[in-house]
Image 1 (spheres, rainbow, N blue to C red):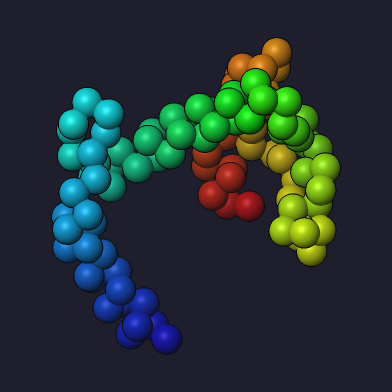
Image 2 (tube, one colour):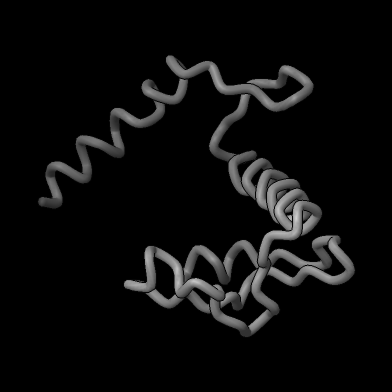
Length: 97
């Protein structure tokens, strides 16, 4: 299993280059920018969802539908939305959950 993981990790940079991912300004997206780009997308989607009347669980709350059809209960311990605007995103906490 570890050799497969190592092989995938070694191939990942080349795979990323083939995708030619860019930020909105056209700057190539590299691994050093991933976190910021993901946080920006989460912010945009959470605010859009809230704006359309969708549920964004309160900090410490659980998704109203339980997530994954109720099979998984996901606690929101990383995203704070107040008044329809994202106030805080604890990206590192999200990754460690």
